[in-house]
Image (cartoon, rainbow, N blue to C red):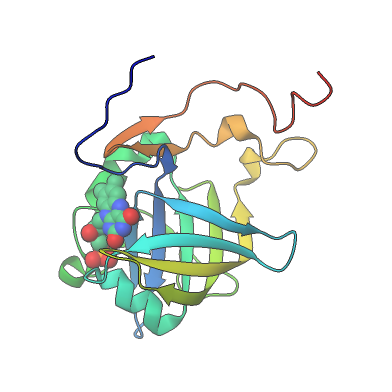
Length: 191
Ligand SMILES: Cc1cc2nc3c(=O)[nH]c(=O)nc-3n(C[C@H](O)[C@H](O)[C@H](O)COP(=O)(O)O)c2cc1C
């Protein structure tokens, strides 16, 4: 197999899940930032469940999340792609309440002041652990203190039905949906 060494590197990790991260200003006005990725850092086997976000210092949401010390993570479905793109093309600093601006529906979280997004099937409530300087974006680490799932996305055993999630993926700056099921973690054991 012949490999080519690329001369520049652009968003080398893929695919990643698009995420709508919610926050609230001191007066309660909510905001939403679109992120091309949100990732698992610690999965709770030892200590809390921790997720990571990369946010550029110039974003309005950067200061809101830093001030409040908390944020929501909402995973959009692929059919929300237009709303997501619109939401990620304007700043709450200019348009005010971005829920109203893009037509998404807020609902109250249980442990944080920022609202969550009804249209997204899975929603996390997070407490900010720290912000780590990382480059053009900084790493926000958040402890997940609550998780909400649409009832219609649960199977008969109460597990998340993966086929119902239809996540919006981000690959090399493009929006994609996912394909088909290939197996479960560990399916080759004992083969
Ligand atoms: C698909 C997509 C992915 C994005 N990913 C990020 C990201 O990971 N980090 C970031 O800081 N901004 C990202 N942005 C840009 C912000 O969403 C955008 O600047 C937004 O307007 C910021 O809103 P705010 O100023 O109200 O916080 C992305 C935008 C889009 C459309």
